[in-house]
Image (spheres, rainbow, N blue to C red):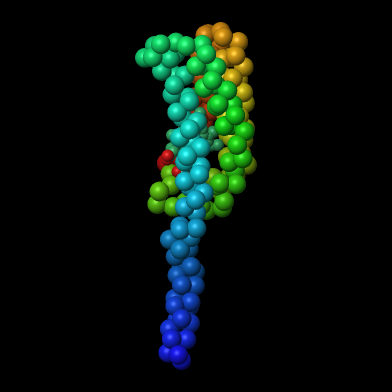
Length: 154
Ligand code: HEC
């Protein structure tokens, strides 16, 4: 009984010193869900963006109704509350997020706002049915992805 108690105390001390000496690896497990969530949101946004892109390029037949649906979904996805999936220093081995996010969170938030504006723009363009407007809005949308990734994603 006594030695078991000592062992658990030692385990607790070992675990806490691990937290202090190598914060990153000790923290990793706790951010798995956040990383999975934000990557899933990005994957769904990218899916819809690529569908529109391939129709504009002519790789798949241009379909006004499909463009409308994908654009509406991009606009909806852009309103998801994603900042809470970026808690401070939430980088894991699976994550491509850069520490710069938390060194300049204001700029990160601004990049997210730029994307939300571009997402609303593609939705407006798509609902108008004007192909040229969709093309222009896609350029803005693509620029908003790159604008954030360049600074904040590996
Ligand atoms: C405000 C910043 C920001 C904007 C805007 C943004 N992204 Fe991302 N994106 C990230 C970050 C950060 C990651 C890395 C997340 C991680 O791995 O933890 C990421 C990851 C991704 C991934 C990889 C997902 C995975 O499974 O690893 C894809 C694909 C992606 N983004 C596509 C897009 C597209 C397409 C757009 C624009 C329509 C976009 N992103 C807009 C910040 C952004």
